[in-house]
Image (tube, rainbow, N blue to C red; front, side, top):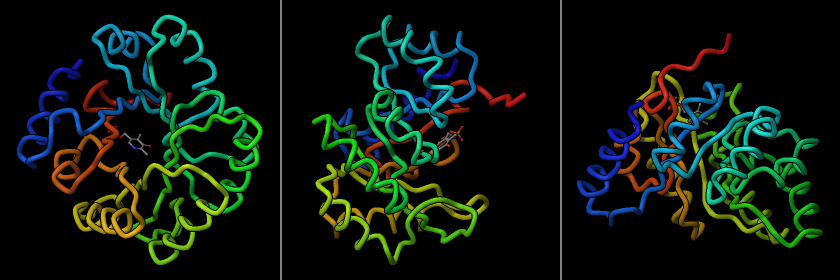
Length: 217
Ligand SMILES: *Cc1c(COP(=O)(O)O)cnc(C)c1O
């Protein structure tokens, strides 16, 4: 497993960007990976993980949390409104607040329970029709709307279009965060996390470079 190597590269990229050590959270994206690889990462000291599917997480993380109580699991995949309640029980952060109906549902659920995961607004920086996320030109209004519902927003998140230079998307996301007074920048994956750190990422989501290729079979 390449975890130590990726950690070293994150630390190097922090230093190269003049950022303090530990300012970037490495999210190890463990979706559809065999359990033994996830346990190996936990045993190597990794404590922050990313998942895309509510069902898969529900089958995996309650047991792992019992063994590793200080673990944090971040939801980074699309979230159906009817799974929002389960998601609040399962996750320490949700990076994919991407539409008003989901924000409203989360706000209602959170009111009743007084505890809320860290929330990131997903921005569709490439305005791709098939991709989730708020369009860049609608982001400010949506962020204000979430705040109006008392949702505690931590930051913004993006997935740049495949096959395009990612840096302009990282910059656009950083600008949206800055002008809305948000600290969190969830951006950068296996192929571009160093570039994302140079552009200010606070959370990088790295899967295959840590665990190896995913097999969906
Ligand atoms: C799967 C996934 C990742 C990890 O992708 P890798 O290329 O394997 O690092 C990161 N972010 C999101 C939103 C994902 O769905």
